[in-house]
Length: 225
Image 1 (cartoon, one colour):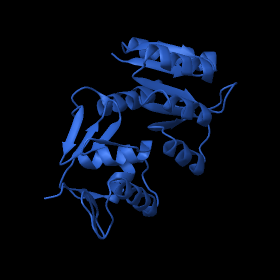
Image 2 (cartoon, rainbow, N blue to C red; image 1 turned 90 degrees about the vertical axis):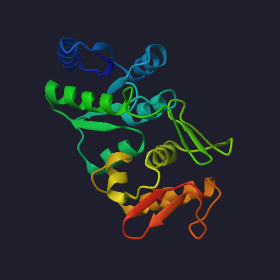
Image 3 (cartoon, one colour; image 1 turned 120 degrees about the vertical axis):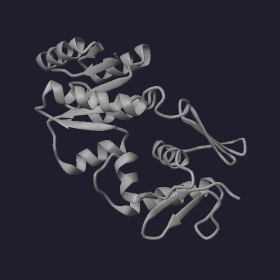
């Protein structure tokens, strides 16, 4: 059972989703506007959020950014919009998955289960330590030699993913799929974020300490010897 928040202004769609997820033994709360949804996120700490984009008070992307300011729980976008550029923008803004309407309740339940597997207990240690790096996944905080590192959401996700696999070369395609939640994209996006991370870790491509690029393959995080 999981705590699921449905933010959807259509009462018929909302009722159908609630009925199905309740039968699957989830504890479901709902909101019909973005502001009510943000209030629910702050007060009742859901484990998964299903967010409709066509809300009456705020655009879904704006609502997503506001939610990301108070919560890191998985967000599944439910939308009738299917333009590639908008989907990519939403994923980059912090969405974890998306479904294009119309979709079945079974499909939504499967996406929710997948997000719970990724974020559930036992899926990863609470704190990752690699050399002088310490990454607190629950608090989304990183330190290098005891000094806090200011990271964007995407920089943190990238660092945490690599740090969980020390000494392993991770392909760019895997990073796009698992960190960016995209099946395809521009390798330059990854290179730029790796460059930003290097700067914050006090290293350069010419003189790496933790982040090493393996030409033609991907990126590896390895502690200094």
